[in-house]
Image 1 (cartoon, rainbow, N blue to C red):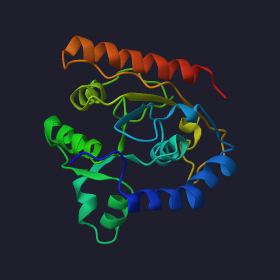
Image 2: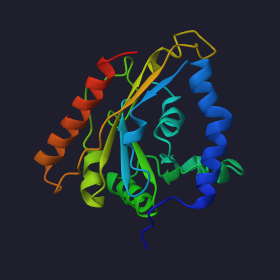
Image 3: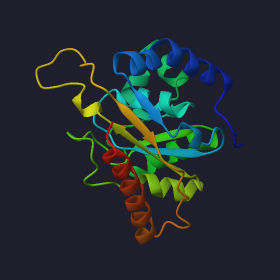
Image 4: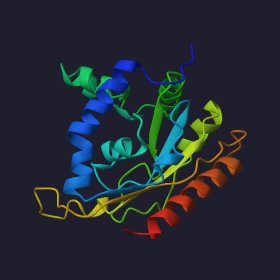
Length: 212
């Protein structure tokens, strides 16, 4: 049965972690700014798409959009006692390393049906400058199958948090800009998926180019 919001216990944990750890880190240590949070749909299926340059991106993104964002995590993490309960409560869901794309898609569609917003980094891996040179169509394929809107978000400055040889995160200024939701593709036709992926990428780059 489809849900309109994530389970209450997950929502409670999200706010606890956000206000005790992530938001203070974002706003005090990194002097972070968030623009466009009012554009985030607070219920219903949602796919948050963003650029990716740091391990800090996932929790910062969740805090900025004001609702829990669920991410896929490697299956091995769910075999560790205590950790598996913690990451499940915070919305992580397991995907087997090296599994076919369809397995990851099924897992993500299940999260969306449970009322979660799902986070997907368009590049798939971190980039050194926060740009998206080779966006993947996985997010728009899932959006088409779930008929879930896509929310473009730019994370500016996170690529500067760690420099080569640094052991601690540097207190660099960060800016997170949230764009307007983008309608999902009407079909899984590859040309349409690529067009909507390009649209998401263009919006994120435009937001990113605004800088601080």
